[in-house]
Length: 314
Image (cartoon, rainbow, N blue to C red; front, top):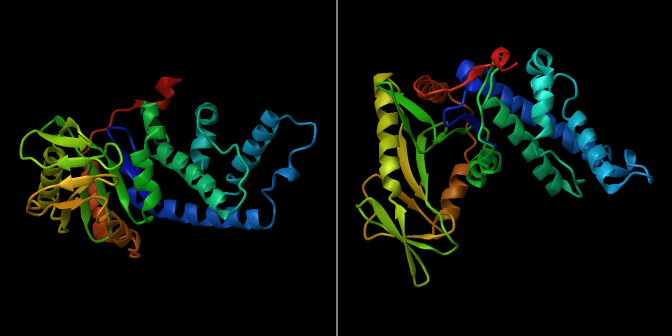
């Protein structure tokens, strides 16, 4: 599961200590998954163990929620930061009440994995929107953002994700596209998706045409934001002596990209070649690299963060 190190202009725990949290995340996820899998296989997570005949369905769901939440808080390897929990327990408890935790019983390992990934996603959103002493006001739509979950839940732990970060360039905020910082390269990605099977006609103008059957619709040219993002990253890397490849990708998972010739140093990924592209990224087994963390730190250093002090909020 890729690591969310930055989302728009929210304060991130990775900004405060990238090296610590990037390694801690991998350790936490691995150990908690092993515990969850072992508990499931031995029957520790079966509903019969903690639901009696007199409980209503709603009470049973609540009991299961409590059981699973407490399970993932065992010992010191808990998904809710122990330091944060001790420092501001009331805030964490209020936050948890609004999150979508697990209210159904896993019937098999696939169900358990889905449940587990959702738990990790909640952790990632906390780390990407708060620190021990600071909080950002998060737009709740990100909790249900399918594209965000796609990048986090589809790629290995050693990929670092910046989701539409806002960079400060000469004191002016500039929103970028999705940035995937891998062990060997940095990938700038612009997604363009409509209805299943849509055809997007390439153009050098400000808008492309989306064809859905006989219908036509204008969509913003995804190359504009992508080229801006690439230039920002290359300039920051060059200014900080970071040497690593930077790729640009137009991604349409459910549609087709219609273009005469692929633009220079640009990859078009659509339904025809998506599986190959996706598999190549997923099969990368390289660990986190020092150069990768250096590159991510540079980008975090030049990104904008809007937040308030936890004590002020109280």
